[in-house]
Length: 346
Image (cartoon, rainbow, N blue to C red; front, top):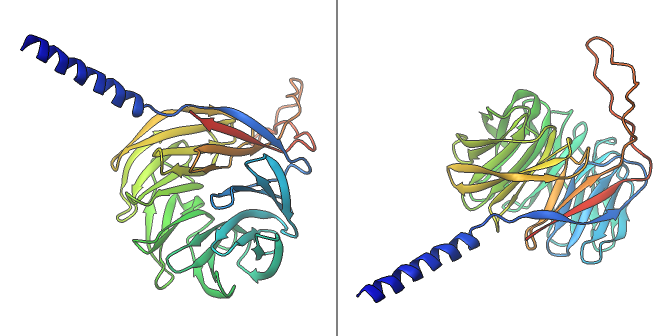
């Protein structure tokens, strides 16, 4: 009996060790860079799991990168002040062209622009909503969302929102679209069946919400803003948990395979948290990136993280201080240094 008990105890101990190893948080390390060059202006990145292509918005174009070969394979032209790109079925892409108040509809197989659609002022973030097969262009300055039928390219609705509009997400089961209202510290909730705003949810202790992600299985929203990343119930709006994050966040992403949540920041860091349960968000660690790398995306199959950055001139220790009440200016960017940083999980 003593021997049998010892064997059982040993098996139990070994099992707990194996479980512990399997449950360990993945570690992220730099896996490469891809040079883009040109003017340093950039905003959102997006990744298409079907084609393994990475899309990087870049001033007046969207740069298309084959992530298998880490090479630029094309460019979507004529996208003045582009902020983001949404990817829809049928090889359709939709770019938000902030400077011309339009969305470009693009054939992603040829990268040719098929048509353009008028929006509100300064379309910024953009998403594809799969339940009704619509594209939402979030007009930052226009305090509205322009809704476009993905198949026809026709505007189906214009939705007034509560202020400066940032990133949004959709929940097909709950039939809702959620969008950060940066200057109101809340989330506007849109009923997708009738394109009306049905709620305004505060995001405290986060503030000035910019990035947003969603866990479609637990119906949990993740909003990054100010100095916090909050997890909210997508049905009720209740803030369930929060963790501190890096400074200057502009994007939030969720990895459904690992339950990791990422908030990328202009201070050169990505904060990582883990959704331990539908009520608990746990801080995990930090990825060191580069100054200004405030946006990101990820490959959910390989758990690879992508962010964009540029190099800067050295800080001048003899620079004059800013005038009273003014902002300190950072060092100037170095021309032709825009690049993508790649971080792999292991």
